[in-house]
Image 1 (cartoon, rainbow, N blue to C red):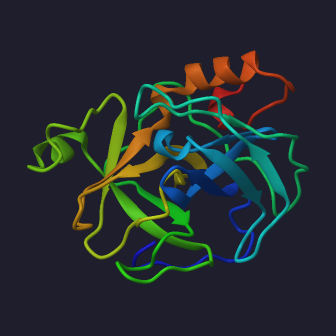
Image 2: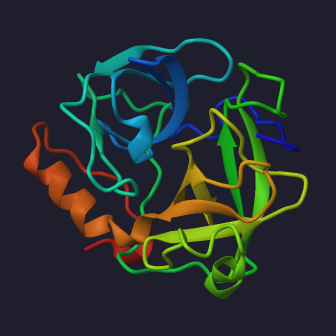
Length: 229
């Protein structure tokens, strides 16, 4: 996280730290708990052998491992990672609600991201950091010369901030708006300048629900109050 601050310990109990072992070596990503036995992350964070740490701030927490069976064909799909065993929910480990299907966030809304990624181009950290970002309109994102060919409004949303934002190692973490996970850190420009792009979770909510229902260990994932049935 660039230009942010250290998060208050366990103030974001849904955050998950993902350690990945791939053919390229070890990498880290963020993720977030949406049900006792499921974590969401970015598609490019879901390959390899993955260890999930819950309840972490700057030290390892209980480990729940799950090696996924393969890569996702859609680079912006949201692969729910099923944990080897359900997490025990506590003040330090808890779920975050998902948005209603098709729900959008108004441009100008102030949201936040958190992660254990780099705090600048050269500096890494083991402490969870957080920062606030402003949501941009789809029109503004599509007008950006470097993003116009890659930005898909139906599946993405973006934010703007000149000196703050996510960085390498923050991928997979949630963009949180009004205590609901609306986006997932996905990609940005190589020079780190805005806008920064997030996967739009509301575009995938029906698929996420179907996927979790189809796997073992039925539970009750978190939902935003308006989407409770």
